[in-house]
Image (tube, rainbow, N blue to C red; front, side, top):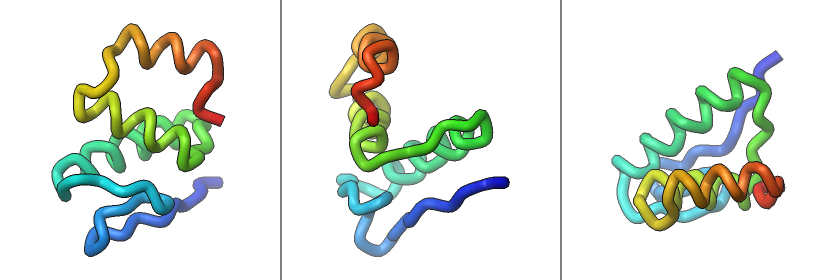
Length: 73
């Protein structure tokens, strides 16, 4: 069964996490959807981490380290 998440395009938020523009929000939503299909259960913290990766604020190496430490919970 698939779960849904709250995406507010007019306020540029996903589960209350703010985005700077619609393109970044949609890129992050697509990444979340792919991961949710594989069983990922997003949290606001996890969304922030994915947003930061999509925008280049954190590197792939940092993203992998965060995932290994399960900091997204």
